[in-house]
Image (tube, rainbow, N blue to C red; front, side, top):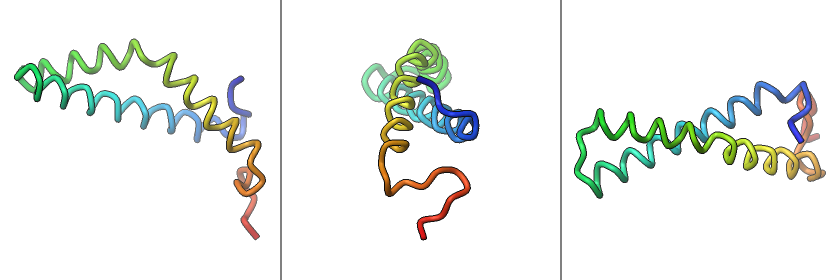
Length: 81
């Protein structure tokens, strides 16, 4: 299930940051293990990360579902007090 409309920006930001992390990690591994040039590593990592977007969205769904079910995580616009 996708995030509620008031959390769409948070959801999109979270998925974007996950995607950026995957690209950086995969490119680092490609450079270290295969010795490929940095440009080739970033392009290959971008392609592999694009293929992983559905899995990253499932991870984001699980994180947002967990946050919605936890009583100590406030909804958007609420405070901890």
